[in-house]
Length: 346
Image (cartoon, rainbow, N blue to C red):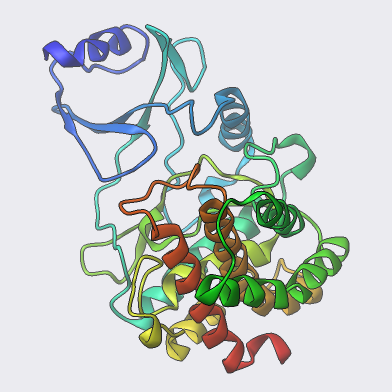
């Protein structure tokens, strides 16, 4: 317990008994440092908040408090584990210059990739039903915790600046990849058109499969987790990120470029599940925008990887020098595969 001195300090700040808790590092998250605390009666997640990634934790605490106070939790078919308020009613504690928080622990299984289209359906239904349930909240009260997170116009502008300033020689395959991303500029035009037309909703904004907890038999979503990016957004972003990370056969770090493709039955399961969870809430225009979302989210991530490579790999962590280049190439192949299926032209 020498290195877990903060646990006793937290025990004094919360209406919980952590004095005899068994505490151990938990999970494989890359942002916050996380521990599992097991007591005789309950289990909790303790997190040391990474304020380097989220530089204004107060905005996240603000949004979480709005959800705690106003979200109709009884309308959800799954748990939604928000931070537990401390004795002062706050969801963050400042200890020794670091922010900490405690959340309920939800047992179950976190998948890194789905094993069947049925799980894609369940995932999409859960994320979209969250949007539907949160639609009764005043979106204008929520803060944008990461400004312009999915702003395709801004990301393309950053790409253009990187092209002008890069010290790399744009020739050979790199030139072809740059030209491909430039040739997709119509997606920026579509983005601008949709954002003028659609309402903003409270969305998750990070709808990866490992942000869900499934039941042991994988037949039910037990919880949606990693709620720090809950903020105003567009529904096509949440659907699109599901397409990018769930409907593909290989992940964004794969080097098997010629094998990269969108799996049709996974895509269709995502679409059906997303509509099932929110059909009574979404407008006709929002439903029509969903297919654009898949292309848009693959494109924006490819742009971001390529921009970072051109800038000298200053944002994304890499394991080798050309990894962001390879990620951009990976997303290029995935975007081509999705466009060949023609969903966005329907």
